[in-house]
Length: 94
Image 1: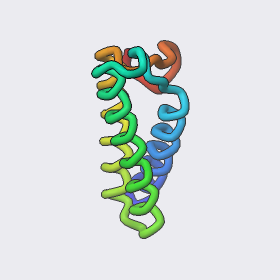
Image 2: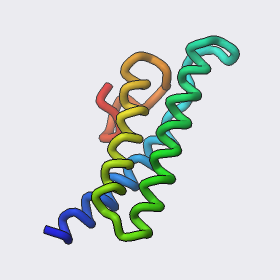
Image 3: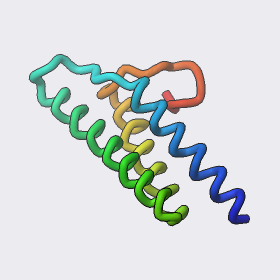
C-alpha cells in the first residue's frame, strides 16, 4: 500500500506541475477576473511547493493532499473561464 501511495503522490505532483505550465490567464490584464485568475494560479503554485516540501520530508499523505488541492484550484478556475487550458488530454476536466 505504501508503494501505491508513493506512486500516486509522485504522479499527482507531476500532473500539477504540468497543469501549471499549461494554464494561462484568460481574462484581460487589469480586470478583476484577471486578478482572480492570478490568485487562483498563485494558490495552485503554492500547493505545489507545499506538496514538494511534504514529499521531501516523507509525508506522503500531506503531499498528495497538497497536490490535489492545487490541481483543484486550477481545474475550478478553468471551468469558470479564468484560465485558457488545453481541452484535450488528461490535465483538466473542461
